[in-house]
Length: 267
Image (cartoon, rainbow, N blue to C red; front, side, top):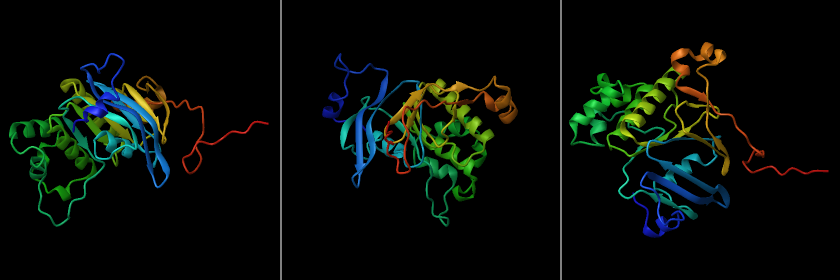
């Protein structure tokens, strides 16, 4: 999923090219549906080993931005740059499987990479789901399905992982454990991570940058670790607190019910 040469040229820096560590860059992305602005002037960059968490309310344009980043949807204006021959592993929010279809976890994963059985076994082990490989896909729990979808993304040997709400439907303990796994994967494989989170305040502690999106970038920054805060230790427990962090929003504007920015009138 490489960008065209024209797209790449419009996102190059002043030296004429991105550094070799840049995996993906979005520049001035705009998108409308039915004359409604979904994305307005969105820019971001993800480098090797960097973890970026994208947060925002429902309908803020997060999934639309990811679809554009994946090359599945064209922007109205702006451009996406992918490092040449970039391997992307994508984990969707969920997959629809016909309940009567006989499909084991192992067979489902082989659809992503049928040739590397050793990698399949290693990935199942790393994600602690080896015991599920002979289970029917329709019989596993929501938390187990999230790990299976993560395994499927990893079987592409990605340089960039794009995860669409990976902790959806998982309790806080499971969320912290999943975040720990993702952080370990990023560290061990050196891959970048772009993660969409449904939680507006609680994010993965190893996130390098949080971007708050509500049709435009409302604010961005680094999360604050909670592992030493007694209140969070009591709430989550010591092990979970180390993998969770709080993001404090700093907005200079407000949004109305329809998502637009409220105008403030001064007397």
